[in-house]
Image (cartoon, rainbow, N blue to C red; front, side):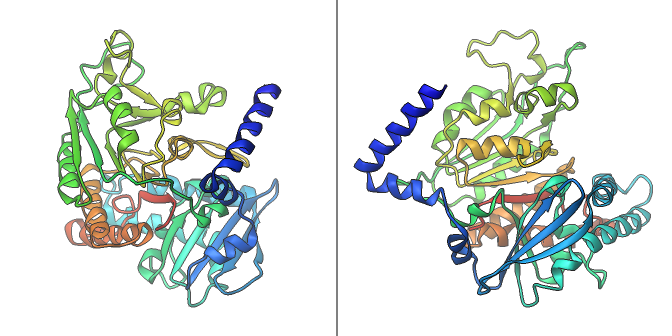
Length: 408
């Protein structure tokens, strides 16, 4: 391994000497504080959270201010406990127990968490419209837009946009070499097959995801759009077509197996279900695929052409949370593969609400909105629709999706 590493470094030096573009790309992969500061847009704050063994701390960088503000937030174990309480409330459909009662219970949990992790930040970001969040610890599973401000409003309704960064250097962006593709690949309602009794997963059909994929393609004006549904929505087809897409939209089931298996290799126990996934244990496919696209397989793809990877499935942003490593799952795998921006869910999302959210997302993007603004617009549209249709603003229906990576 040491020899291979030395050879790789030598090859990089040789390539850097020959290629100005490659040399610039390598330099942009190592940005420092001045580069990050220069990349913060006007009226924007970069808020980085850090978890130690005892505390959570926030570092706040604001456009036009050269020095970060450091704020101690509180006891780490207490904040983690309140994150768990928030997540248990936000990820549960409130209708069976009464939508109004569920919303009131959620507001209590969301306000308590906001008092820890948002109020100390809010006091230092007056006049800011956009918040870039670099989370740590259990905060990597929180959508800050769904928290409750001191005036009782959801943060997304106070005029703020939120976007997640894997690290501060994500702000600097990447140098793209050559012409970029314009194709969209949309996948929905794969034909999972008949579940087997011994199969560890049993994936039910998702007919709403078929119409979602079709509608997404109809809203795409950037070039060619390919839609794969039913038996055509195979693992092999995704692996073949995704590397040539600019937008990758996958509407299907996600899976994650925790416990011992996740600790051994988190990228092998999380993934996306494709056609024939219910038959994976006995099926001998001619293409060598089993219908279970793991995060490890995603990480091996070349997705450097992909600007948007939209994972329209339940809890696609979940995974094993490792200190200093982030969330090891699909969100890490797609970033390793080269996708610039991910849109993922933090809990099991409701089919019809997801369809409405995605429609608003792509309509806003088609109108020229940035990623962060398109996500906020889609969230507000879904929030208003839920208030009208079922008389509750509980974020279970509208707050499940976040954007990660390039905010543009």
